[in-house]
Length: 474
Image (cartoon, rainbow, N blue to C red):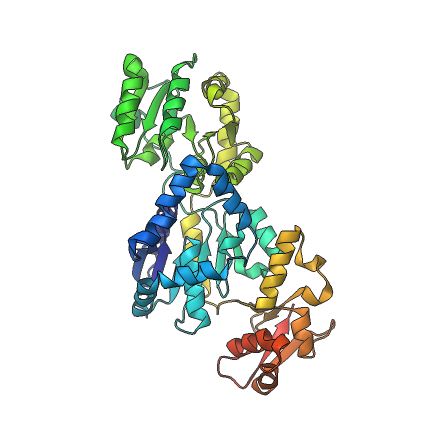
C-alpha cells in the first residue's frame, strides 16, 4: 500500500515551514509514497496560543533579545521541559491530535519540536502507529528537540550527532542530513539573464541584503553602511512583505538608485543567490543553509542570541562567513571583502564544502529506508541524559548505575530502547551480559515497587502485549 506521510511544522518565522516544504517536494519524487499532508500546527490552534509562540517570540527578539538567549540556554539540556509547559501544549493542541489520528499516517516528519513532543506522546499512549522523524532546522543541537519515543533524528552537522551520541542516543538513530532547503541552489544559473531581469550590471559584484523575518531598523542601518562602500558594487535589498520598509529603503537610496534594486517579496531568491557575491543578513538556520548550498559567503549581522549565535559560530569556524559585531562598521567590513576577491573566493569554496543542497532528499531516503519501531528512552535514562548535559560530560562519565545501555533487536541489531544500568541490574543484567529477557511475569512484581515503576512501564511498552521478549545489549 502507498505510504501515508504527515509533515508537521510551526510558523514561528519562515524556516520551519520552508524546511517542511523542501521535504514535501522530495517526497513527491518517491513512487511508493501515497498521500502527503503538511500542517502548520499554529494554524490548528487558538489565536492566543499561536500568538504566544509566534508574535511574542519576535517581540522578545526585537525588544529584549537577551531573554531569547537565556530561554535558549535554559532549554539546552534534553528532557528538561517543565510539566506545566507540557500540559499547556497538550491543552491547546487537541484539534491537531484529532487531525493526526484521522489521517492515520505511516510516517510523521516534524520540523519543529512542539509537534514532535505531541506525536511522541501519542506513540507512548498507543494512539498512533507510525515512525517519527525529527529534523533539526539549526546547525546546533538543542536538547528541547529530543523526545521519546522517536524513530529517526536528522541533524545539520557531524558535531551535533557526536554530542547526541555522547549523551546516550544510539548512533543508528541519528543521521547528518543538513537542513532541508529548496532544490537547485547548487545549480548554475544563467547569470547574464538573471542580472538583466533585475536590472543589474553584468560585471559588478552583487551584494544581496535580506531583511529577514523581523526586518526593521537594522536593515536600514545596513543600507546606510553599504552606501558608504568605496569599492565598485551593486546591491539588491529584499524587504519581503514589509512594504513600509521597502518605501523607507527606496527613500534612503534615492540618490544612488543605479546601485540599488529594492524588492518586496520575491520567489526568485535562488536566482539572486546564484548571481550574488555576498549575502548580508541574519544567520537563521534556513537562510544560512541556503547560502551554503549556493556557495554564497555570508556577512552576518545582528544574530539572535541562542540559535543564531551558534549558527554564526559554526559558519565562522568553517570559514564561510564573517560577523559584524559593530553596527557602525558593517560597510567597512563589506568594503574590505569586496577589495579582496581571493578571500571571497575562498569563503565561497568553504560554503560549497559544508553546503548540503540535497538535505531534503537525504531526510526522505533515511526515513523511508527502514520504518523501524520507535526508540524508547526510559525516564531514568532521560534523567541521566539531562544530568550529563548539565554537567557538560558524556553519560559514560556518570556513576555506573546511571550509565546507559541500549536494548537491541537480536536479529537486526537495531536499537529499540535505552535504559540505565541500574534499571537493567534489577532484571539480572551484569557487566558481562550480552542479552536480556523481559517477561510479563517479572514486570508484575516490579509495578508495585516505587523505585521500579519506570522499569515496569518501559518493559510493558516494549512487550506490547507479548508474554516475553529477548533483547541484545550494547
